[in-house]
Length: 456
Image 1 (cartoon, helix red, strand yellow):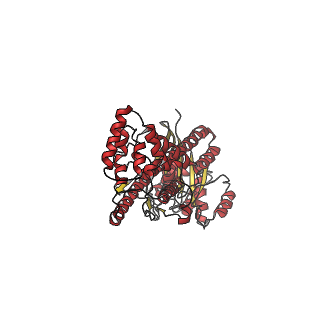
Image 2: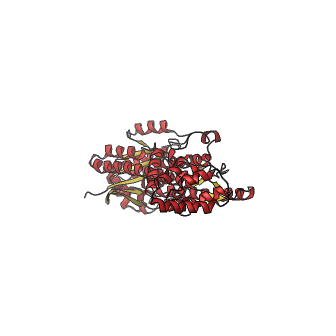
Image 3: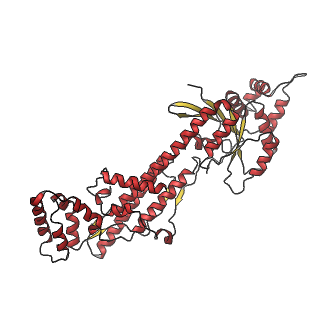
């Protein structure tokens, strides 16, 4: 087992060093992120491992505050006739009293730099290139360790990336990486580690392992997220409530169903946030504006009838028992549906028990309330929107993700996936219904197919 690569994160105060580490470690609780300067006062570390083997150690450091004065001080350290190289000047400075007084914060940074293999110099790309930043780089270069500049906040409209590239080139720093810690690109970590591998050839195998592991985890999270959304949609599509037909009962039932579906969507939101290791309150969804209710004939949907046909069996005794139950249920009602019921009388008693309440409600004036197709489309779009947002969100982001409702004409149109049409005929597929059987093999297969579609 080789020793982990040690990387120190350095830079001016309040440029996003801790933010970068939060994103690289996917830990929203690492350090303290604030707009106040000098938030980090001590060196903090984090370790990245693959298959239990530590490959990379990252160290956060306080911000450099007075590099101009420190550079002048370092220049004056050499005695008459002495020629000190950079690392020797740094060691002499660290052994002196000023390292525990005036330049205490800078000393913490330089001390850690000497213990590490390389440094990431974080730059707020929104800032102009000032003399203090050039002096910081000169002081850090005295440490004798490779430095990789990281341009942070390049997603901001007013960044000065071109100015910084030109300034870094004049200082001999031609290798750099763009990495916005609030909105990192999907390939941001890969590019950062590849750039480090150019500076530290001996560490290339470990960094390539990190890159491969990062890609595998990203794909696994996306697949798991699509499955969470598919489970939500199947629960919503198969959810149904038997409702009295009068207007007051229908209105009350619609409101209750809206609350149940809203709560179910929120559970999906929280599961997605947990999957991507964000805080529970980092996303909020709006209401479900189109939940007007739906009263389709799903009881006599071809999928329902197919199930009834599949379940035929048990011989004439079972058929007779089913027929007797139907006669008792129908009573004196004169319905055209009696023909259909008679055709289904050969089904097993288990079939009648599964669907008897639904048939009874249909024949006695009750209605089966389900969610609108438009609501299913809205749920799918909002959760896919959240999944995409989480993939490109840095763990230092402070603002909530707001999942607004897409424009009505967009999500009222189009055809629902066939899986959801089938789910409407399977109330036992919804965890929101009594008698749900969420582990049923057919439901699991439907969820896998829908999850695959959602990833496409």
